[in-house]
Length: 117
Image (cartoon, rainbow, N blue to C red; front, top):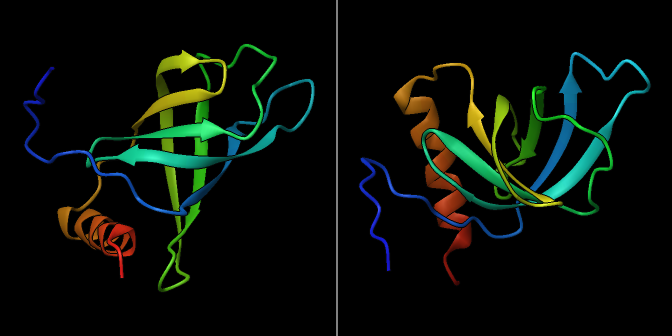
């Protein structure tokens, strides 16, 4: 089993849905997809799409919109595809550097929501 050497470990939020669009939009048509957040960390996010994409978007920038489960606050994240584990599971690396306290707030709420009541 591999151990991760991360400063901030990944965690698996519960019931966190991502709405994803390509930025800028695909030339043929606007693509909007949904998926479940599998895991996330301070540097990236893994999303399992509700349906596989049938187009090549590997060089695209993705705009990921999340709505935090407890507060209902919307969060927008820009990322690029880092890896593709199968036709519907993508690992995305965040593009913009973010302030640690903002990322901490996001992570805290997601971790809190993932814990059993």
